[in-house]
Image (cartoon, one colour):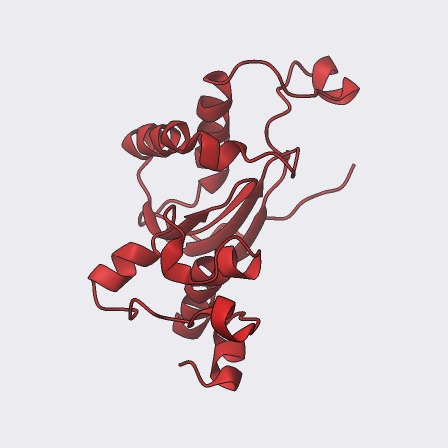
Length: 186
């Protein structure tokens, strides 16, 4: 069995990518309120700060900052995933290994975690989160994707509403902060 190593920094900030098991299902955006409820209930029991988030049909990206003296993000993810799954009808395909462990087949078992190193790393991951719907071809402009913290960043004056431009007009491919600099959009 593979030994996964997580970097548990007390009070640290972390970038996560969490995927559905069936990457073609639009379950997260179809059941967005249920996902929000799972986050809300988990945060009540185990507080953390959501610095940025984007929810796409089959995966999500987020940056969290953990409370001082706490690095237990695995418990939080387990609670979010299980609360969300418990409130869905059992219609998903379940592998034999999951059946043997009495598990649902909604989420991929693992998730990607990256420890945020500094302010530049933080800013790059926030940009990555917000550009992601454009990168996946879901919208032509970042501001057109509703389930994103981008709109809160605009209200707070951190981003302009037209940040990253409009790919439907010029066909450009946008990416992280470094790619935006190359394109002259920062």
